[in-house]
Image (cartoon, rainbow, N blue to C red; front, side, top):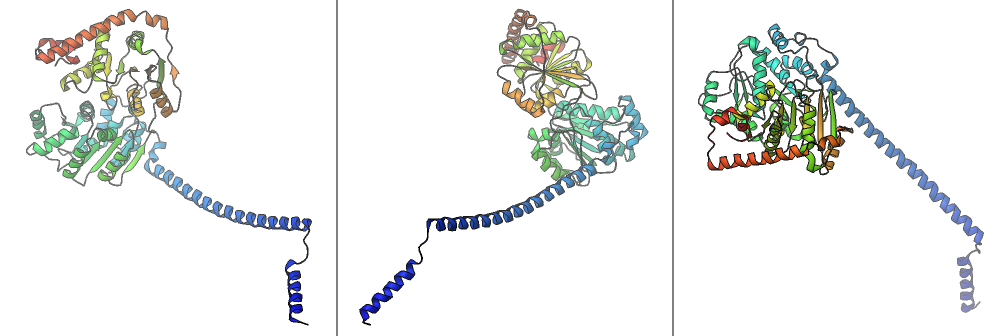
Length: 507
């Protein structure tokens, strides 16, 4: 065979081998189907394995979460086992008969939940973090164990209570003095706005209890000769969240550096913010946490309402409400200092006994306004949020939110001025067309819809002419007071001392 012939034969065989047998369309379809089935089976197997892995991970996460929940439950049980038991007297908590007698004299029939939970731990010498709604009896919750310890081991400069406002400091002092009336207790109030020399003299008398605002206390620690807190056994931080909101953090930190590390510390707050948490870590040692309410609770005995009204008739609706509630003690909350004075003047012009309270009134005038209201000689208090927290005014029947607060927490603290210590109370919020967003935010926080307080609109508008006249009178009076301040003619003379206009800026 020639080379050419052999090459041709090899090429022919190779061509036949490469082409192979002819594949029909049906065979192609079957082959493709098998490939798809194989891929699908492989995918299903892989997916099943992945799902099993995910399930294992999810199961682990659930176990971790369950463990965390269990840990929290155990911590809650450890922190407040006394919550399940109701106490009929303070003697059952372990206090002396002297303190029980003082509680009886103050009409404290039995411990409130925060008192029942915290006092036994405090008597054991534990540090306390107390979280409770306003009006729950927090002051007695820390005052009673301090007085019990003082009764057992008398000592001067025994305890210091830090409060955010002057009014709250005076109120705490009054409760200490009442509870310690059978012990010969000496208590000093050290706050801004009062004479430093008078306070220095009070400190030289070696009181048992010092109640102070942080800034003024630091002033005395730095400048009052012979005064120190080296013998201090107890420190209380009351309304701790507000202390920090009011920029007292620097002063508090300084105070913590000059008092004994070996002491008992009680921190009471309406809310546990990140700042409060940081403070408790710095100031408390292995504390027990007791809590009787959530962050945004209101008491069951409080009836809460709203009125949707036009802004231009706001004063008229307010006067109508006040007229409907004659004889009740009422706090009206407004947003600004000017509004407290204007609103009080309008109400006075219409024959209502109203007094204003705001942060820029002198300390003497502020205490005067507060005492008039507490004694019942004036039954309407027009206030900014300066009194929304901490002050113990025993009998407030109605709270009116003339201005809706911009902060939902402020709403809780405002309405908490009524329905205290088991009493019933009522709050009414005046909602204008400009307040809808703020009001809805409050309802969202409360997780409930408030009922509408219904009134006869025609009856309301019958008062508009008289209210307009009172508004004009109020404006003229405010202008006259401003002029007197500018010219310096008002020196706090007789007229200012003997009528309520002193409350309205004539100091």
